[in-house]
Amino acid sequence: MKGYFIIITIISCCIFMLSSCEKFLTEDPKNVVAVTNFYQTENDAILAVNAIYAYLNSTSTGSTAGVYHSTFWVIAGVASDEMNNESIFTPDIDQISKFSESPINNGLQETWTMHYKAITLANIAIARIPGIDMDPTLRTRLVNEAHFLRGLLYFDMVRLFGNIPLVLEEVEPLTPPVTTPNAIYDQIIQDLTAAEDLPDSYPPGQGRGRATKGAAKAILAKVYLTQQDWTACAAKCKEVINSGQYQLWDDFADVFKLSSRGGKEAIFSVGFGDAGGAIIFWEVGQFNVRLLPPQLSVEGVQNAQGWQTPTQNLYDTYDPQDRRREVTYITEVHNPDGTVTTIKPYIQKYWDRAAEPQGNGSANDYPVIRYADVLLMYAEAENELGNSAEAHTYINMVRKRARWDGVAERNTVPDYVGLSQEAFRAAVLQERRLEFVAEGQRWFDLARTHTLEKLVPVAKPGITPQPKHYLFPIPQREIDLNPNLKQNDGY
Image 1 (cartoon, rainbow, N blue to C red):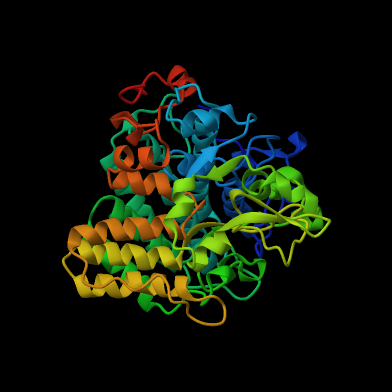
Image 2 (cartoon, rainbow, N blue to C red):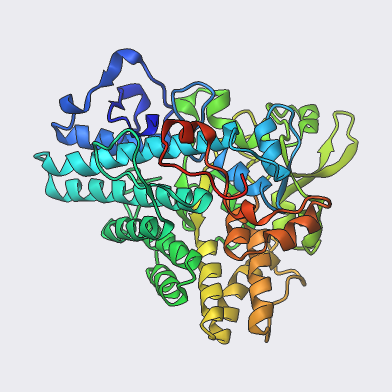
């Protein structure tokens, strides 16, 4: 598997500078650096960890995107009741949207490949940085950042594919053995626990997009949520809440403004930036291409193609006055003659119209996890623990924000009161659906709550997931390369 090779490609124009995690990545074959010739200086250590971050957003491989650039979150959206695929240019995504995917699927192959490439860089950093003569505090921080990223990446992979190779060493066999999910989770928890020693924050201008103590705790909480370890989940969530590092924006519209990137609600996000001022289509246009309606071309908006759209059922689930609906979706376009054309709902939440009126290359971040998620995880865990009052308090924090229109509270989205434990389960799953549209959450939520077969047919009539769809097929190419891999049941 190419993801297990121990050659790292690092060049100055494709590695983030220490103060930023949002530069465009490119690659020059002349600048391939062998591991044996690297990891000599403090700057080498910084660049090595920045290289892991670089694989989260975009790579130098032409049309192949980074881990969170445009495939991961799309798969999680279309393999659920959240989004449909409408593009002839993405047949592999279309298969996933219709639950007809096979082991030969470029989207799944890309997801596998990019995750393991980034894991490989994390493994090398964890092994090599401790031996560098450098500032010990920075050295420890960089190693823990690598632990955080490796834990996050394995968390994605074990949920998507189940039994996978657990590659932890710099030198691994070409065909590594497969590890059980329990062992993978043990390692994820170990990595994220180490990352809890990261700083709470960084000096202004030096840490946007970098892992923090709060990010480690928040992802750990989600790990425990997935494992249904409610006590541990609630404890980690409360540590994040009590830290005082994060808050909800008063207005849901503020969450996705460019000025809010790295702000008080962002716990861990992946930045795409603006390529140092240059508009590079593949680098920063992902949200526009995939989500904004092509009809916006009459308003001069560029690259809006609407490849993935929300299900009508999702849109109709909102109370019409729910602030999240008007922020998340666009249903009108303004024609040059002054008339307005009504269109079906498209997702516009990542488009800051005021900052980018032409939409040519959205520079918005991808939110891996934000504070609203912690509040809803805490509410869910407390409900499972039988602490109904606490659960209602925290879900209603998110509900209250949905009533705010930027000036005053609307008479809508009332607080939940007196829900039974079972009714609360449905309510918090619904609240997550309304809150996290196109944030790569929905398939994971339906999979962990075992509700795929129940909820997907409601939004996609005629499409019924099967038990096999609680995991995705292992890419056939990986099985061909590694005979230790076994295909998931049903594929």
